[in-house]
Length: 501
Image: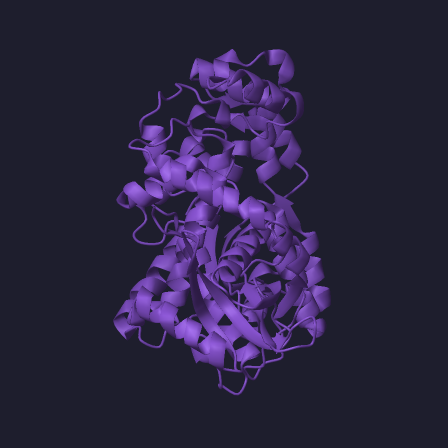
């Protein structure tokens, strides 16, 4: 019998095939950038949790990577039996499973007799998820089976409403939810998970399961590419239909529909029918007359605007919240009444709070009148609103700017679709389709928002050399400028206008 980690049991809960692959073919796993970023956030929160739960540094940290499993488990047992201080990453092995607890805090037992332990599992999310409760149940089961005197277990998660006061004071960053009753009540349930997981792992071949919605929930599975490679691929995947809900979703699931051609038109809304028609005929749909009419109220001169932001799970600057999107760059193109296009922008890679300099540069660049075209206006609007709250003196000007925003995304959704979009109306799907000479793949380095965040983190890291920082700055400026130049080109295509660089 193998010893299965908590993460392996959580993988089993998502998909038995995933567990089998985790054990027998781990090299086939390819985690996405978003998954890797989630891992990094978890590590960062773990570091802060140790400081919060052990402010005087009297606790002990188990380093399984440095000590090895057997030594780490032995030291964990010794500490839990003899110490009265917090223990972090304490390990337990029992009943064919192994687990490591984020935080173990000494406490009095419910009877008031003797020292027992309170376990806290720390999560980087902003709420308690169902799989967190599974996680806690597994942790409690393995600890109790290993003989740990466990009195309570809680889940601590990030408080999204908390505002960092500065000075490395992170008290209030985490919120706790007691899950003792639920976790302890599921002991036999967890025991059955273990038995079933051991049965799966013992098989010579992976379970014959097909890909589906479970591949993305509650986590994006790193084996999805491998699994899909062995399946027959749809010529026109039904997943390209936008927002399949209600009766359409039920029909797809009930009949295991994979091809768009097999979906009855009666179940489709107007937008979905356009996608199906364009896809099956391999011909784009473009109602330029309607697009031009929708944009006709907005006269030149006009502006085209895009933001780049950075988000920290652990706030870096006073007055910011966990996961708050902080703008550090904007690109702007101004289109004159004569059709001449001029570029402007701002980029702060100092590592200091960029919001004040960003606000000043933005207001100076956008003037006082004229439409400001964006793509998915909710994003820029929310960032501008947050800046208005942060800088009350600039609030009237910022609110006036926000009222000038005009969203090109609804125009694209309602009046344009190219088969190459594959169900997406992101600017990175629409722009190369409508303006084939513009393609984000032609950019060097930074090609999307996630890469822009990574580039910012690298550029502001103290170890980054000046030459590398200069190269990152060039890449960020080129990427953001393509966004706004692309917006100008989309506007020109929608209105049948001509622009000159």
